[in-house]
Length: 251
Image 1: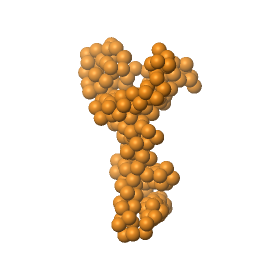
Image 2 (image 1 turned 180 degrees about the vertical axis):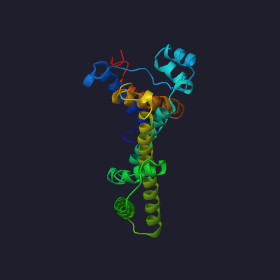
Image 3 (image 1 turned 120 degrees about the horizontal axis):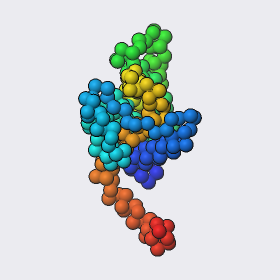
Image 4 (image 1 turned 135 degrees about the vertical axis):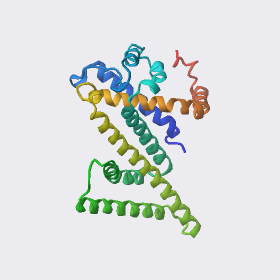
């Protein structure tokens, strides 16, 4: 599927890169009294000599990716992974279904957030909260069936089954996105509960920046492997249509 001329995988990488650049700029100008770009959080249980060598390494993007497996905080890594997965699944949902339907299903995120909170033991639901969540489930199911019926123009049984299956697939994709964002919230809370995740050490802007950068590191290789030919083809088509090099755009 393609969304606005760009595959969801490549579009997600674009979104994360733009977000990381914006956050980096805000940190550089000390937006909202931010202390600036903080070092990467290091797990407190890491051996001291390993921690010192990690902090002394270059903070360039390529070296950061290289050091991820040995120095990345596990809770922060989980938050960044689910953050990127949530955006990726959302883009796949928009690419495969109507925007109104995707937004309707995304409004059901309280279901996944409550489920993750109960599963992790952070919260317990009252009868009133359970009843409200069941009402949301009923609304999402009703929206899914209504969306499939709206796509059934021919009225035949085959088209109806096809419309239902497409709506169910789109609903599942968006619910995976909701679950991913809920898990991101869980891992973010777990990270904040640790000394190295305290807001005095890593403020909100730095936390968002690191999650964006983790997502970029996770997606850049798949994009180069699976979308490189499409990217090169699009650039070639743009050059043939507008003459990027001859017009001086790239000079």
